[in-house]
Length: 73
Image (spheres, rainbow, N blue to C red):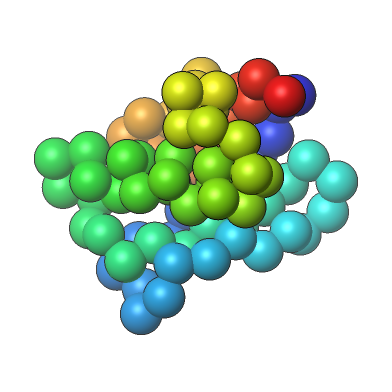
């Protein structure tokens, strides 16, 4: 399954909001420095979808707030 996300870093809480089918907004506490936000995005998505972290891959947008994520469900 492929989804599009928009990441908002440096937030007070970490959460996932569904915008529409296949599109989500992910809020993370981490800053985007040294890949910390991407690591937290994977962690938050794994909890939201209840799948292992190893089943989540960032396909596009490693250095962007808009990302394409592949979930092995």
